[in-house]
Length: 96
Image (cartoon, rainbow, N blue to C red; front, top):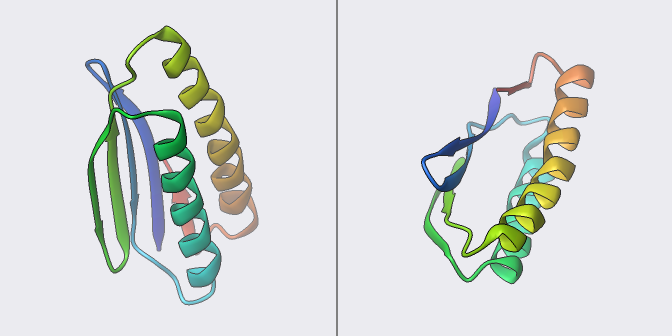
């Protein structure tokens, strides 16, 4: 089961994608890598990136309101993707 959790904590935006499923493994790996790469392009304040075989946790501290807006727009795309995946494959993914 894949769980995807996007939330704010103090001034940070946090992304926690954990778990895996055989059926969605390749797709989930591409999503995580693309998300990380895009966030690093937008924000030089990405820190706390931790990854293991089946999980990724990122903390982002936007350096200004414009960066926060850019990051939120990007995350909305991924939130929509994970929401759609959850609707199509509820047995493999849970979006929180």
